[in-house]
Figure (tube, rainbow, N blue to C red):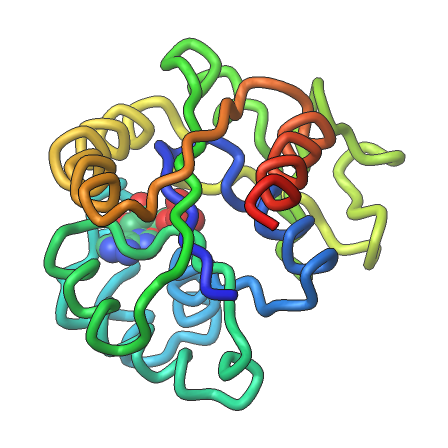
Amino acid sequence: MRIVLLGPPGAGKGTFAEQASKTLGLPHISTGDLFRAAIKNETDLGKKVKDILAQGLLVPDDLTIGLVRQRLAEPDAQAGWILDGFPRTIPQAEALQEISPVEMVINLEVDDALILQRLTGRRICRNCGRIYHIVSMPPKKDGVCDVCGGELYTRPDDQESAIKTRLAAYREQTEPLVAWYDEKKLLVPLRGSGTPESVYSAFEKILQNRG
Ligand code: AMP
């Protein structure tokens, strides 16, 4: 199955995708993770996008589409995928239709107040990318990943000034995709405000009902 996760920053796309990837046995492909890995490894791409990510702006479409095209050509992506954070613009969505058409678009809906609360408390493992929240999903030991023992950090773009820019980018450039996918009868709305478990079980019910 080829699934796209839509929703504002902090909607829970990454957490949802981790769970869906395990349950459905599909690769979780996050363009944000791919960009952060490129920055960490100081590749040419990483150097180009470092400041863009820090500010909370969107990376230009040509770079992003090229990256996704390459990733979707890899062997593990042939049976399907869960795309998290892509597409974020109409040209990206058009490119995806041409590369490998999506079958289901989950739109995770959450209110702005919750978004801010989630993003400012979010911590990520520097080593394996696992996502935590200091209040709602804390690690067993402060600052340390339960899974791999890696160091937890706050993403630079989870600072309040970058969050505002990211939300504005979402409203202006990404939100139009909701109507775009709805018109194509691919959109599945899902309330993203509950616990990760409750959001995921609502998704499983939707899958069952679709047969
Ligand atoms: P995320 O981890 O999905 O929140 O993405 C982090 C950052 O990576 C975004 O704020 C953008 O700077 C960049 N990024 C991720 N995905 C895309 C995309 N599809 N188009 C443009 N920029 C992206």
